[in-house]
Image 1 (tube, rainbow, N blue to C red):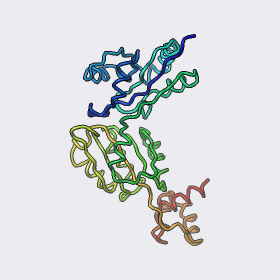
Image 2: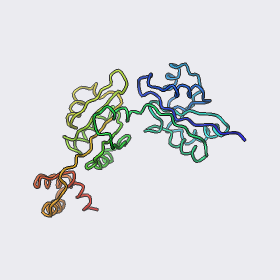
Image 3: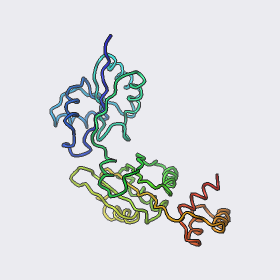
Image 4: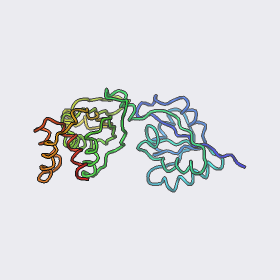
Length: 279
């Protein structure tokens, strides 16, 4: 009986080519095949380290079909490394289908730790790291993005997102609209590269910085939003009655803001109470 091979999950640099482990280089050189998100992109990394292992593609559009082929090779005893264009595979990158099917098929899966843009950004942002939520990319459509951000109104842990250069300003603009201009956040771009930048401040300050120079909107982004600071949460009967009354005539966000101003309460907490009342 042929002993099946191993699928290695190999993290690769997110910018600086020196950010790769010795173990990763050894595995990439020793395996029979490397499954890469973009073979042309990954070839540059392999050539830099004089690695000549064969490459095959595995991306969002072919993963379902290609996973079956790779599992057959693994069952025949071949060892395969999975890499993405940058960072750790499966973290907002392809590979979930392959890994899941390997587990179901009894194929050994071995992860190699290494670069991840979310963790790299978070550890230098100056925001709380005892609890954080990684959300990947926010939805593209405006309504879905609005709803995703509204769920952060009373989120107390740090929230981490990836964002593309063409959408980053619009996303921060919506953060201002949904979470308030004073919500603290950090914009990180071009991590580990020559023009690595961290800008921290209020959501409005971050938006102003992005809009001040077109160059500020270039590159790959990690957005980190500070959690809501817990404040006064006791709501009197009078305040609750006013919120209920205003909700009949106004959008919930406006009703919460008016009630908060009248009774010196946290509008985000009142907004959450309004959602609970609606349900």
